[in-house]
Image (cartoon, rainbow, N blue to C red):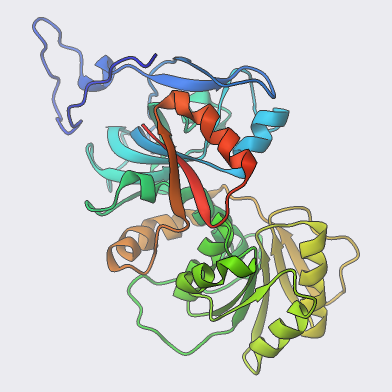
Amino acid sequence: MLIAVNKQQPTLRKSINFFTSTRSYAEMASNQAAFLDAPSTPLRVGSTPMPKPGPDDVVIKNHAVSINPLDLGMAASGRFCKTLPWVLGQDVAGEIHDIGSSVTHLRKGDRVVGHSWSLFTGQTQDGAWSLYSNVPAKNTAIIPQTLPFTEAVVLPLAIDTATSGLFDEQKPGLALEWPDAHAEKSAVKGVVVVYGASSSVGSMAIQLATAAGYRVIGIASKRNFDFCRSCGATDVFDYKDSSVVDGVIKAVGDDTFIGVYDAIGTAASSEIDVAILEKLGGGSLATVHDVPANLPANVKAKHIFGLGAFSFPIWEKFVTPALESGKLQCLPKPLVVGKGLESLQKAMDRLKDGVSAQKIVVEL
């Protein structure tokens, strides 16, 4: 059973006196989390200490969290869990409850979305599946007042994973130019193919590449063609179609071909990726799983890891204004399966059953 949490907006700068107490609001709040005690065991909801923000962090009072395939894999195997019990989760949306001493662009009470870094820090206070989470301020962005938390929370991991393959200059994938939230539409800079275009990461890759001035060709299930086009894809092909490679080649036309972003990363998708790259004379491949073996010499490949400082420019300069202007959409749409930390196990089970062009979300 959840402990009651004070509903007052955490915007006060000074300590609040409750009768004889002089403790601050941040000190008086209570926290709970959904713990993974061992691989392949049900989640357990229990008390946990309130997060304490580092100088460059913020503590977010979570109003919504999402479930990613990565979370399912970690829960099943224990991989990447630095210790047990562990707090899973990557995506949070809510209000800033506490703030680090060096953070100047955010304030207590701001409505935000953020990407938790427990995978990087190894600290359970940085996990998303809790009432309050510690999040790097540079991986946090203000969202419009009218945007529901349950919609905003589909963004964070997808943004960082897409950014890793599209724009990261330290470990080049496709090495595209960065998107500008304020830029007018310009001439096409080149063509990018996105495999798994209707997935959370794939649909974000379409949005970001399109915002950066590139034309995107999607590969997805036929039933999701309209969804992929709503994200910005100009052409979409069925991954089951035996002529998918030839269709993509024809759609590229005379435009400059940049490469393939593979948001699925299976043996079957890699086979199609490489066939496209070979027929178009080479290029770059960014994949969410292991780089295929025995690649042609004219194909440069990168394994994507969706966590790191490489995404800071997107969060700092793009996310907030792009949400305000509509250049960035909260896609795929959330499928809210429950409310409260106790609903997270049900949410994981729902994701195991499979979803298409949706993202599983729990409201808190």
